[in-house]
Image (cartoon, rainbow, N blue to C red):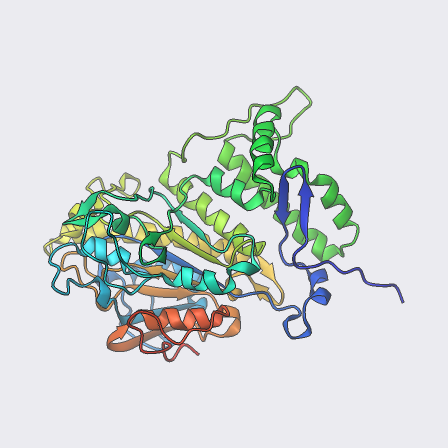
Length: 448
């Protein structure tokens, strides 16, 4: 009987200054421990949107499995069976608790920490470790990147941003410790390079320069290794590898704005590395979403955070007919026209979420999909932006958590149930055993 070749889950395609991690292939199963053979790791991601939600268009009327999706969640109709709508959760750390104004800053600073941030605009910031970084400490050494922090707007290390609160609070949801926020990356090109660079940082800089000068794709450096690997693969795995490499090249093309990166028949094409981020907001969010998928798919990271915009963002959304600033109209005073505009912005954001979910669902993994092996939490640290409410928050959880979640339901929890209970449950499912964090009272009930 012919010996079946084995390929480790940690196999990467290597080339000059490049390390291209692979998606999970069927051939990798024999190299895994018996208990884990064929079982992909569970990942978790957190997506934040600012300024609260038009809750009338968000919350389903019914609970249980027979609920109907409200208008704002309609773009997720196709993935309703992979989703939990979680009502009634509270972020107590976002409340004033004697500190007065500054709900926008507190809503984002406490969103993943559950902590009550110290009110200061100076260097003496103090918050708490966030759920993603608690997880990264426990399982981050299993992947190339312990965690991935992304956003459309830059993080600020200091400055006064909201009623006496530091800009560090308003622009960061990920916190390594009480005093150390994790700055997010907004440039897709930089994220791409982090995912596929080799281990020698000095060499990486030289290789990036060479790629610019010789108009090379990251794939050009690993083609020989890819051809060698392909000879070991069955037809199903070869198809997975081809689809993955196509996805990498497609993202690279979109980042650089070039149709073909390796066209050589008529000379070398232009290969402009972008100096900043895409001009179109949709494209920016979607490129970053694609990079999260690549990071999870290749097991380069199992933890990610994504701020669509910073707290209190006053971005306008002319693409959906809203020219008013988002923060400005979030103080709607129950004005019908303003509420309708907020609803349009909320719907736009959920459509961007649906793009990410669809990408995850398209990646086959084991007996299911990448989405089946993820937990993707989406929401805001404010419910109604006009009242600055930190209770009954707009929270949804997408993905199967590796088969540990009973999805397809709307669950309403009793008042004042801590949002951090959800985080304890998520941490336990990714292998970061945790009994409590911040104000949690234990794991969130009724998820299974």
